[in-house]
Image 1 (cartoon, one colour):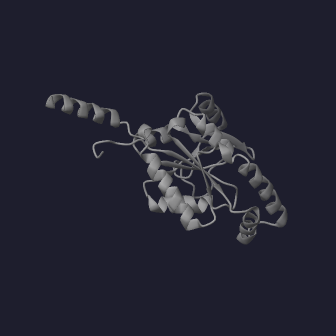
Image 2 (cartoon, rainbow, N blue to C red):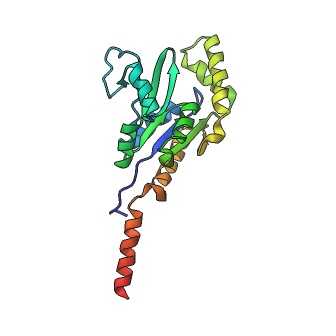
Length: 215
C-alpha cells in the first residue's frame, strides 16, 4: 500500500445553525493539518485585510457567470446582491494530488456538488442536534441574536434538517468529543475506498505478473 497514492476527498459538512458544524470543522483541521477549506469565489468587493486566494477569489459578475456557464463552479448561490461559489479547478487539483478539501455549506450547495463532475470523490456528512430544544438553547447561549433573529434561524434550521436523507452519513451531535471521533472514523474509512486508490489496479497487475513468473 505504501507505493500507492490516494485521491483526495471532497468532504461536505452541513448542519442547521447551532448544531456544532463549524466547531467540528475546526477540530478536524487541528487533527489533520493537511485538510484545507475550499476557497470560495465572490463578486463582492474585498474587505479590509482579505487576501486574494486565501479568503476569497474576487471576480467580477461577468466572469462569475462565465465560470458557471463553463461548468467551472461546483456550486454557487446569489446572496444579498452578491454571487458566491466554489471554483472547480483548485478543488480538483487538490483531490488529484491526494489532499482532502473541506466544505462548510448548506444542503443546496451540497446538492449541486453531488451532481458535479467530482461527485465520485464527494463525502457528505450531516450533523443533527440532539433535540430542537437544545438547538434553541445553543443559539440563545451565543448571545449574538435577538429573539426575532433566533426565531428565523430556528425556521431555517428545520428547513436544513428536512434534507438529512440526502447525505452519505448523518451524525447526532449529542457529545462533541464523541461526534468528532465518529467523524474521524468516517474519513479514515472513506480514504480507503477502492475509488480513492488509483494505484490499486497497477498493484494487482504487478501481483499477477509476479504470480505468473513463479509458475
